[in-house]
Image (cartoon, rainbow, N blue to C red; front, side, top):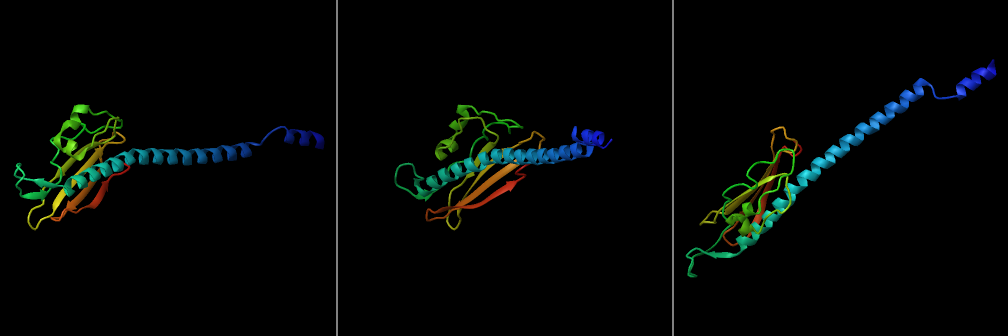
Amino acid sequence: MLKTLMRKRQDGFTLVELMIVVAIIGVLAALAIYGVSRYLKHAKTAEATRNLGSIETGSKNQFQQETDTSGIGTGPFVHRFCPDTTAPVPAAVPAAAKIKALATDWNQPAWQCLKFSINEPQFYQYSYVGNIATTGTAALYTATANGDLDGNGTLSTFQLTGAGSLTGDAQRQALKITNEDE
C-alpha cells in the first residue's frame, strides 16, 4: 500500500503547485506588459523633445544674427526670432497613430527660417511663435508640440519657451509638459 501511495505521488504535480506556478507567471506577465507600455509611451514622447530641441537650435541661431529692418542695409539692426507659423504642421493633431505631413506644409517662412522639417511620419503637431526684441523688452519664442498618443481626445502638450536679450543672447526659459503619458 505504501508503494502505491508513493507511486501516485511521483506521477505529477499537485493542483496547489500548478496554481502557484500560474500565479507567478501571471504576475511576471503583468509586470512585463506595464514595462513595455511605459517604454512605448516614452519612445513616443522622445519625438517631441527631440524636435523641440531642433527648433530651439534654429531659433537661437536666427536670433544671434543681426537683421536689417530697413531692407537696404542701413539699419536699424535688431535681433529677432523667426516669424510665427501661419498654420501648425500637420494640419490636424495625430490621434493614436503617426501621420506624415506634406512636404509643402514645411514651406512656411517660419520653418524655413528655423531650418526645420520632418520627413517621416510623426505623432505630434508642431507650431512656433517668435517676436522681435524692442527697447527694454526681451524677444520671446514659443515652440509647441501637441499629440493625442492614445486617441482618447486628451492632448499631450510640450511647450518650449525661450528669450533673447537686446545683446543677441538667446536662452531657453522653460519646457512645460502637460499630460506627457496621456
